[in-house]
Image (cartoon, rainbow, N blue to C red; front, side, top):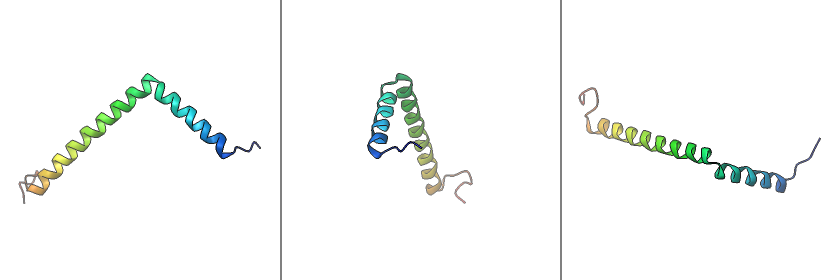
Length: 61
């Protein structure tokens, strides 16, 4: 069995991260995911504010 030391694994992680950061497709995926998370957070926050103000679907009952 091959023993992998911590330094080797750290170097592998850095190389993989560098490859992902330099890949235009990966960067576009990250941008799209961030935009979607922001959109969902805004929608969730707006819905939550409506519920607290009593303007929800139940008419504030």
